Image (tube, rainbow, N blue to C red; front, top):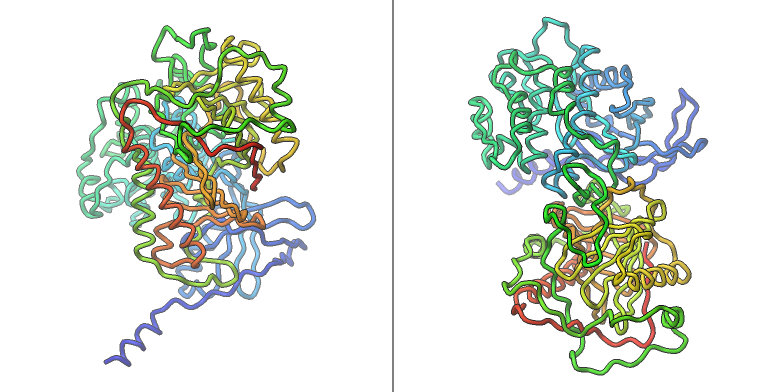
Length: 630
């Protein structure tokens, strides 16, 4: 009996796939590619960056091992996908460049979309503003209209197949289920993704272009509400709801948006609008659509004012806006961790300290820092759900610990699609006098002052724009030419922090374009230092641990992912649920355990908040401590 079980396991286990070579040759077109970073996997394919050795252009290489295509139907499906994709060319469709093969693999060379897919956007943001929804829907509709005009149905329209490039334009991809169709023809294949399936596919009554309209309706609903319209824990219940067209639109949605969604989710496919009608719907053509979006929209809602994504009114002298709807980003500030007793005397900064020297000529009005701060309201702050979620994810991952060794540095738990958008690239701790200076990976600079306010100067292209967050977590935006008087000293301090980091710390961030007047960046909500690491907690839910051995760990509870930057600046992103399935190295588990301790420490600090005062004391430092990590 035991022998039979072992034999069964050996025959059903997946055969090991050959490694994709470092150098890939396209003999037909006389081109050579260098394999770069791993991008992800899905179905039979693995995706890697492939760099053209001559032009140095980086592409997305979709690589399929031939040994996986064992049936003729699988090979035919692959050829059909290639045939359809290579025949189309549209600004909102992932561009197909070429395909070739060697003895082990089929390679498809595609346009690289660095900003991942709309699925990652949805997981980070949950819901989008209506201008953003219209921005994306118009582009998706244009891509689908092009396909339909060329007698092609996509049949797998979903957030995970809509990619975003560096210009924040969408690119529709993955034509594995696409098919050509004649005008009066109907298809009967049961295919698609459950949450986006049209009822006529499930009922097998024949389907055509209208299934893409239905899927687009599901996408709009998901972006507006936060969950798919028919999703349930049980797949059969989901199918039942789809067949019965049973869904609920929350009353919080605007009537025009509600009507727009309902028009696409008609049970009768003949009653649904065409893609042309969708693009000409009053909801699209009569309402504001931004020309472009900033990269910060991938993780944080953009600024808004009177329904438009634009700069807010200039901050007034007392930071009081007459219309409270103009104030965005209300958050209860976290309570900083105390490393020393609040009454402990702090030494003065060294005379050689460049920041103190530079600040000698800065006018002093009132102290920026305070050892105590008052809460803005007497009620205790609500439990931070991101911290709670992250604690649960890490606890489960560590409880099912399975130590493995990654062969060739690769792991089945790796998922680059879940890599972070923003992280702290460098910092300088001068909290004994002023606060913590930090730089985000897009080269925006900020200071978390000791009075629990934050000031951020956007990256170089937008450095005229400033983002100020007061002690009650209200956000204000203004230009450097219109700074309120009592914030001016903080602006001067920010400049000196920025100059110090530029001069003494390595520039390890990447340049990110931001649309003027729309960017709204995440920032340091809380931080603390231990003997082992410096820990940052950002307002977008990201927890970042800078270990003093030059390893950096970035955790995102919204994607359930952890990203490691090692001392050699190599980056690997893993999903925590995949670590449970496939295991991880002992070093990864050790650092995840430390991160869990940090999360629980932050949770405890929140729980112990008593509505009175909270100490802001930090470990005294006579010299600014700094760190630059890629």
